[in-house]
Length: 79
Image (cartoon, rainbow, N blue to C red; front, side, top):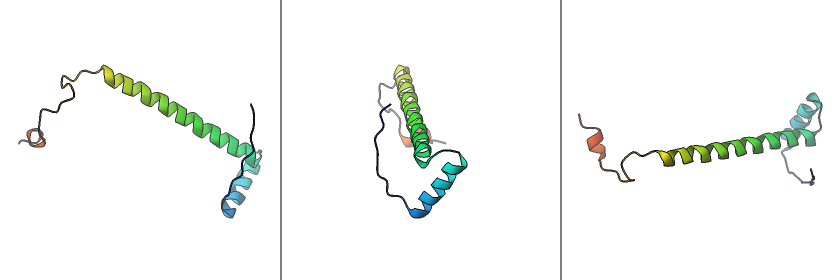
């Protein structure tokens, strides 16, 4: 895996607390950020795959409307 350096601007208190968290977890700040970003991108990829899968499933449903709404709001709420 190829690495690339980045520069971040963070609020001092956030940086201080993140460094303490990294130390408590036995890693570096860079390692902590790498782990968090890998997790974020993995979850985003999973979400996109699930969204595509479910949208494809919707294409298979036939609700017999052919995309046209044949009722009005008052029809649905008639008492």
